[in-house]
Image (cartoon, rainbow, N blue to C red; front, top):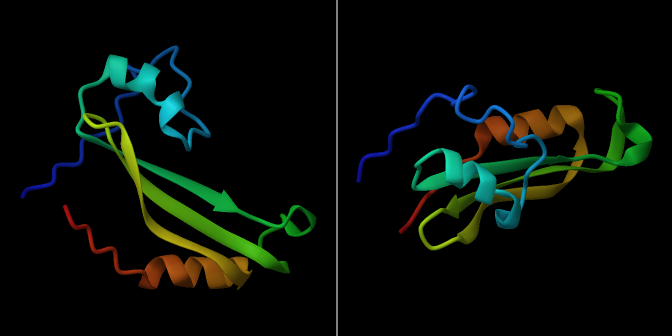
Length: 102
């Protein structure tokens, strides 16, 4: 199976809200404008009291999931919400090994 990543279609998505989307129900306007098989969704998780980069906290993390646009099903690929700092978050992202199975 070959995977082709297309450049982000800014012109085609003009007028469509695509910032901060992390749930399939908000992807419908995007799917109406562009034809793709999958959409990768990601979010950053941070303790509200330590938003400045470099500060420590106990609630740093991220989540990456993939949306199958034909079946409208989501699958979490990677999630880690137990990181101690922003620096640990960056290191975790660099070392993660995503194994996609159909």
